Image (cartoon, rainbow, N blue to C red; front, side):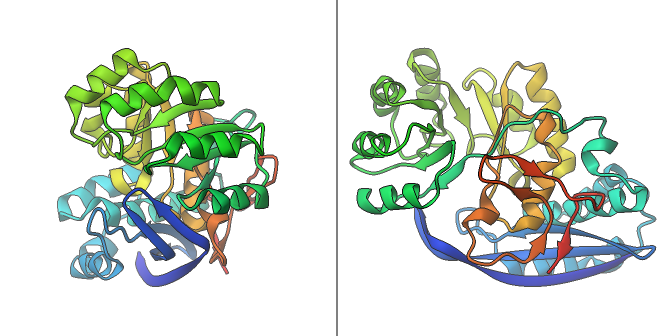
Length: 336
């Protein structure tokens, strides 16, 4: 097996702001795994919150390149077990695991969702994200992209006012992501106001380790609460069970499709609502997420839609939210 590594800088269509940062571009690592004339592709983005750089991930892979390339590849699960012995960061694991799954599907000649025993007859549509900005600019972004379902990033001094103003311009469903910016009291106070304004759920309103606050919110909030920063790796699923109504799984954070599928299984056992989110990936990462769609209640896979230029072909998302799956097997990825 041969490894291919390439760094890309993805320009964003608009400055993207959340409660703790703003950016105009997104660095990303594309990993290719080639075997028997087929190449599978995976992706992981840089992330300052988690102190992840592209150079760091590439250095990790280069340090164990021989151990990866010499592995007798058979299944993504066995390959992942091998990778876990190499002490790689979860983001690095994700890029390799996504590539391995794409490669496996291409070697088998089938899309991953079919290999996993699911169909695309029914699946949730993705939201489209509106980042934090002035109210006027947030309204302009909403009008620029008519969409049936929006995720609104909040964490300002005028959060409810923002939603009131946005509601004047669309009847679409809203989801709120405060990215840990609220307190328990703020969340409980804001929830009924936001529910009246057509908000479906609140994502990670409190700091990731504020379990006491989350217990209060879980008991008193009139809106469902979905974990994000509190649910990173597999062991977090059970920990989140008593405190949240659902979990948002990020492939880059948990280490890829292989652990994400185990998290989905555990979440179902616990009765949690299941969502998979993105990290402003290109179509490489988004196409991998799409393979999980039949297993999910919610999805946030608009990353490639936020880019000025993409770097790959794969799944396509139409303006009504419908997903067009590629004919190419695996995750269906081709680099441009």
